[in-house]
Image (cartoon, rainbow, N blue to C red; front, side, top):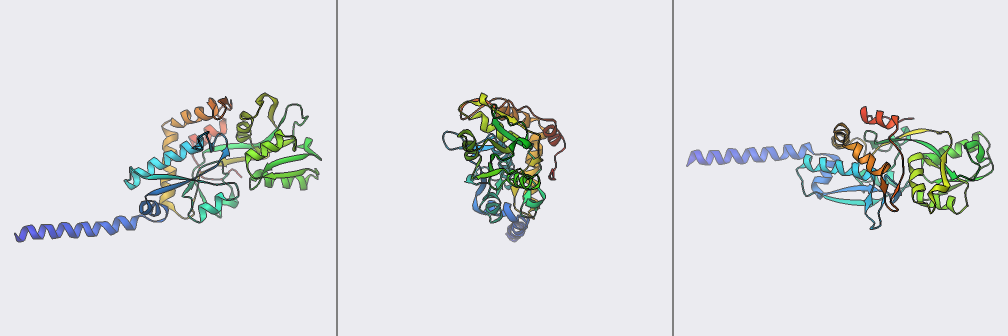
Length: 299
């Protein structure tokens, strides 16, 4: 009986000793997720084909698919197969504050990783690389940025394109009237309705807007890229454990080749809402990003 009691006591002590160790290992976002039973993903409503709503208001897209790969990795890491996933809508203006204040755990959309933002949030390894260009009507006469002199140009508020366009306007004295719309959908509406002659944004997003136009064949993406930018998933700063889980999930998707299927699904196949094909083959810079993942900014 004494031996049995000792064994039980030893087992109890071992269990008690191991519990705080496990708890101590969890910090930051992983601890928050474990305690709440929920991971909150920040999503966009109009960043086609990265993160947007389908006709049932469900978040879909290339970046959403990668975010779900991260969710699967978090489930394994925390041994929580029934982890609940919640989506929280963000905009260009709100995405950084909502990550910083803990409302959103991970934002995978169309967010450029740059040096300025790195002071506020952390980024995963890159998930895409774009060039900032122009979307305009084929009949507009606009071939490059110099052709915008004295014209109305739209971009989306809170984006790097807005900053670049304003700097270009001042430096080159182009006399443009710059319209800052609240999101990409509104930006394209300004263009389609004739209130702007061109829409400056990331080339992949411009192809996404063109795909949902009333007459996609009437539009063209043009102009020399004004910057090359790498998209990453945003998370809170100084959270190495969570960042490792995020990066490992994305790198595994790259290494397995599954990223090629995800890319083809969103960029070279018909996509909602109109079933149109963006016809945007994987660029050499994206192939390089997949072959050699990095969390460094392109700037």
